[in-house]
Image 1 (cartoon, rainbow, N blue to C red):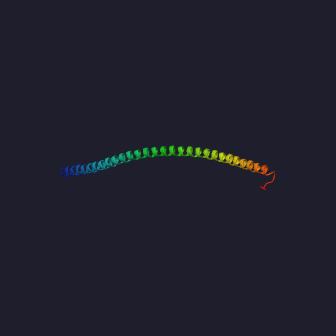
Image 2 (image 1 turned 180 degrees about the vertical axis):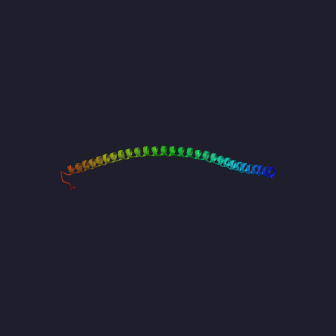
Image 3 (image 1 turned 90 degrees about the vertical axis):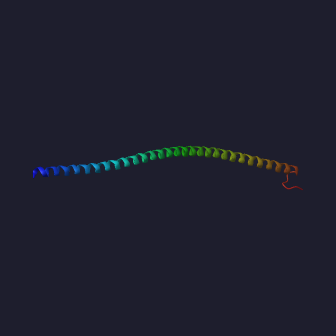
Length: 113
């Protein structure tokens, strides 16, 4: 009996080993598939990160140029305000000169005769 049950036991063990090897092979195939997906995802993420980095650099450049433009606009606005004040003062002085001329022409009175 020992000799007949031993081959059956070995055969059963070999079948079990074959089954387990097939399952491991299936697991390895699944792991390879997952790895390939992970590689593709990583590559896609890397490309997305590179695009985001370029976009951030472009936005930084735009912000810098915008700030420069604002500073220029502020300087020009200040210059325009100063020029306006000077022109306003010159206009007042000219009005005063005209008024004084007319006053003096009328013999010192502020209203014409």
